[in-house]
Structures are given as C-alpha cells and as structure tokens.
Image (cartoon, rainbow, N blue to C red; front, side, top):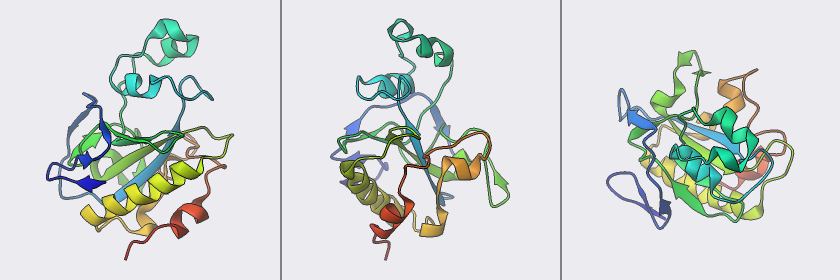
Length: 183
C-alpha cells in the first residue's frame, strides 16, 4: 500500500463517498480514531457498509436499515473481516465518522482526525487479517501525518464516552499497538 499525492491509497479498493467535506486546516491532522461497524448489526459481508457510506443502503433488505437510512456517515477506511481495505474519503478531506466528539479539550474531532472502521462489533474478536491490515494502514497514515503518535491513536469510545463503545471490549489494544513500528 502506497499513498499518492491526493492521500488515496494505492492497492486498495476506492469507493468515494459524498459524505465528506473540506477540513478547516488540511495540514492539521493529528488523531487516528478506530471504530467498529457491522450492517446489519452483528452480521458481516454483503457490502452494506460500503452502500451505507454511499447513501445507497437498500432499506428493504433489513428492518434496521430503515432506522439509519437518513444518516450521512463515512470513514476514511474500512477493514473487512478478511483484511481487505477500502478507502472512501481522501485523508486530506474530513470524513464524517466521529460525530459529537472531544479529544484533549478540543471538539469536532472530524476536523483533525482520520477514521478507520473495522468490520465487527463489540461482542466478537477481530480477525488476524484485520490486525495485520490495521497495523500496515496505521503505519502508512502515520508516515503521512507524523503528528499522529501512539498516544494519539484512540477509540471512538474515547472521544464520545457514554455515546459510543467502539471499537469495543473485544478489540485487543495491546496486540495492535505492539504490532506497530512508528519509528
């Protein structure tokens, strides 16, 4: 995976999402937020996350989809259960992943963060392939944005406590962080 000048990754699937906009300061990227997502909840595959991020979720496929069909959400990246990486938003733009959020007293984390969604849920472990891809992807992101240090890699639950729980108790932070080479 190489990153080109537009901060789209080479070698991953690109599925552009309209759910993004310009950052207030494209040079001010200093936070990496890890999430989990499954659509419908607890089920994997089917391409529903991709459709959700493109505002094309087929509401007739599952009752839950009707509840979320009006939301406009995106992340920069999705890592599926098999480790495949899809990018939806160039890192120079603001993806809509964090919502109401605060980090170290600073609000609106979407303004200065990159968001990675892991296909999964709070109740199930993530796969070896996901951890491998997550480590490679994190190292690439940190090479572009050196202000993202290990201390500035956090979960959605850290910036939206009480509102969000992801990446959840089954996410192995030690395994992930110990697998990184950020030097």
